Image (cartoon, rainbow, N blue to C red; front, top):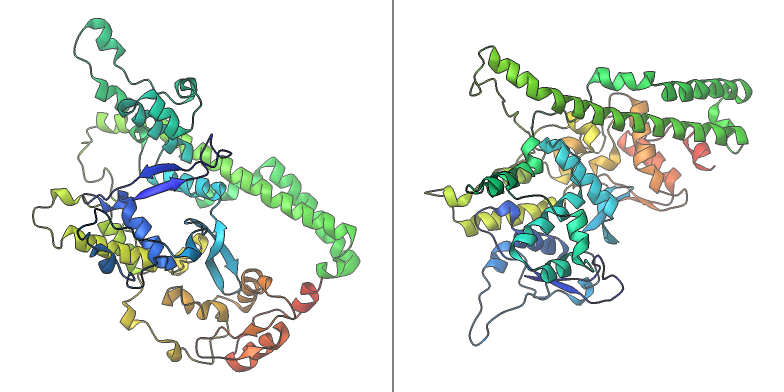
Amino acid sequence: MKVRLLLNKGGRDTKKPKPFIFHERDDTLGICPIAQFIALALADDAFEAENLKTPEEILGVRVALPRNTIQLKWKKSMLDTPIFRRAVRYADGIRTSSDKALPYDSVAKYVKRLGRSAGFYQSFSPYCIRRGIANALDSVATAAERNLILGHSRSGIFEQYYLTQKRDVQSAYIGCPSKDALIRTMGQMSLDRDPRAPKTLTLDQSASIESHPEVKRLQQQKNQLYADLKTTYGKICKAKGTGVYRTYTNLLSDLRCARQARRTALMEEVIEEWHDSIHTKEVEKQAFGASVTEAEAYQIEPIIHTFEERSRLAEVLFRYLADEKKPECSARDLRAISIRDMTTLCALQEVPRREKSSFRGIVEAEEDTPEPDLFPTICPGTQCLFCLGNNQLSHIARTFSFSRLDVLQKHVESVHLWYITLDQKVPCPHPSCENVLDNLEHFLNHAQRVHNNKLASDNYFRQKSY
């Protein structure tokens, strides 16, 4: 597959696309870019040929004489569409944007989270990948080719900022055979990787955030201002539009930022302390007679995925197929399965990370999932009508009931109603209801009267009108 990248480092103003060639890998599907591009193209229905709708149809295409190649052309309407696009929140859930590209800061956040989940000591970023590519190219490409690929104007940039020391100086001086492979290993980030490293703060560590001096100071100011507003106006919502209320909301924002900044700093401290102390702990453990091969060394906790497609991908993607003497199915079949599952996942939505504990479990097979007409018209009073109608969620997430009515209303107002204007027509999200209500007030009355869902608090419209 040939990819021409237009917005490259050092060449954004030249408008000259830089070609890169990607090829299939049958040994490990997880690092096969072709399979992932095909999955994204199928999810977007981007192929111009009308018969290319499934992985089997694409993998079955053959080059017939007298041609040497056959191109799988994109639809004209998809040529200006970004391949990697950001997630956008709407009233009925989170969807992939049709035209907004995925920004760098989102990619950096996902990559950093991936590195933390993998147990890296150092912070993992896209620059780490770029630096690794640069050093790999230095061994197989000329300086001119390397500068062209990286977008460098001169070799001095690579030598100053990218080059890693990977020569066995000791062996060179002594005159013995070099151990360059060992030296290269010492420069890899994975050398200090430990999957046991903490990935989240404990309850006690999270509670300690409130005792941080800056957080305490802002909390005291917030409490004092809250009390003054209650004394003057009776309710906080009645103070909207005043200068004191703006000061109060700014203070809430500063308090949230201070808590998040302290949480981030504390997480970095916990990770650094763990990596600094684990070496001594392991040595002391062995000094007291513990074997490095004991079963207590490290047990991988079983991971329960929300969707069965993700469970299959976790099993297939990084299985080294070349080592299998008698594979259960061919590499082509595994490729088709992985592409189909990745395509399906593009149209599914997992619950937010903070709520995953409420929805854990693998969704049953598609034929066992209730059809929309089996959802009762009269719902439990603490069930979100919008989540119930979101067919991209798992069945467990769709039918989840909140603990209290006020918790449901807070969820609906902040996650769903925030994106609906007062005079906007609202289709009822219930799977078996086809009513379209004239405005938001009519929809809320319909939800309470027909579906037993009081989705907003009594003073919601007064707050919404400000």
